[in-house]
Each structure stands twice: as structure tokens, then as C-alpha cells.
Length: 257
Image (cartoon, rainbow, N blue to C red; front, side):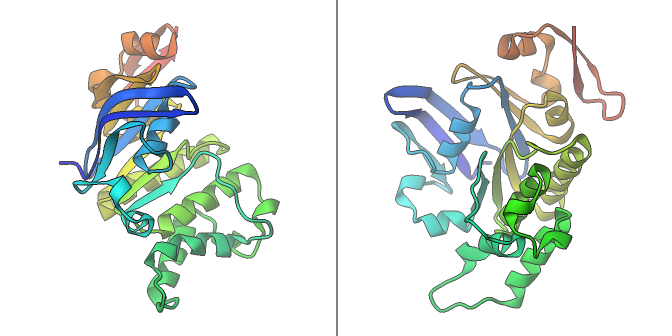
């Protein structure tokens, strides 16, 4: 089952195509990792799935309707996005930024409600940013800022959540905490999550499904235990390695040779 699907999708910038003719099914109720080397098309694919980048050919469908035919507000009620390099308005505080995640649920005559306040409070608590609410975004460290952006995406409270390298700027402890949070959102709240990642070992441990890309194409996809092999790592990253069972989780663990 899939609510979000791309068919024969071609995306690019200016006169350069980055991905061509991709067919992608985002599995409902799963955590999917998109992995690959730098400039392989991971973020471009995610931008296409979120309608930040319009297709040159093919289409992305949400619940059977092409994204191009849906209102932005209607998409935002179902699909949340954390882009790779979000930019906050000057002077905005953490509380104000996270509250903006509730925008899709506001209407012309709908005021701020207890439900909105509860959603923001849950997002702040889940990301460990409650104590930052009164601080301007510009005063935060890179890791704090990243967690606040994740909180805004969580406050949007959508069924599908797309995150582009959400562990950027986070130390290893906060990386693991964030991925555990995404795992809990998937299992407890039945959210479908897609995350662009660089760390293959964390992707294997926390994700159900892996889409591996190289040169704008999908070269393998499936459960981590089925697709993450030394041969795949060599093909995608150009690195010789040994793949062994993770001693904690039993999932594939890549050890550079």
C-alpha cells in the first residue's frame, strides 16, 4: 500500500536533469531511508516528492491525485517536510517558529486552539527544546536549531513526514535520540516517514526500507538486511568494506576495509 508514489519522474535544475524516469513507491506505515553519495539525487527526489520541485516529466501522486492538481494547503495537511537548509525569519523565537507548523490547520476564521497549543507542546517536548521557547533562533547552536526545525515539522502533525538529512549538526547522542523519536512516531502514531541519510549504519538500524541511489538512479531498494551488502556500498559509495551484523540490533553494519 502506498499513499505517495512517483511514476516516470524526471527532475532537474535549469538545463540539467538530476533524476530521470524514476518509479518510487513510499511504503505506508514504514520508515524509509534514501541513501547515496553526495550529489546522487537524494535531496532532489525528496523535493520532488514534496512538490518543492516540479517534474519535467512524470508525476507524483498523493492518494491517487497528482500533486500538481492539489492545493498547497491541502498537501500540507497530509505531508510535512523538513528541507535540508531551512531559513528562519530574522528575530523569530523558537516558540513562534514551532507554532508556524500549525499553519495548515488554520483557516480564515479559525483561531488558535488548545489542540494547537498541545501539538506545539508535544513537539517541543519530543525534541527536547521546551527550555528554548523564548530564545531567538539566531542565538542557537546548529544542533539546537536543527532540533527546533524538527519540532516545527512535528507540530504540523501530518500522516507523512519527509526529512532531508535531519541529523545534520547533531552529535551522535542527539542523532540517535532523533531517530528513536522518528521510530516512535512511526510505531505509536502510525506515521509514514521518509528520511534522507548519510549514515548507513543508523539507516539500517532505524529504518524498515532503504532506497539506494547513484547518479540519479535507484540502484537497489528493500529491507536493509536484503540490500545493504559490500557490493552495494562499493557501487554506491565507491568504498571497499565488510558488512557484519550490528552487535546490538543485528542489522547490517558497514565496516570500512
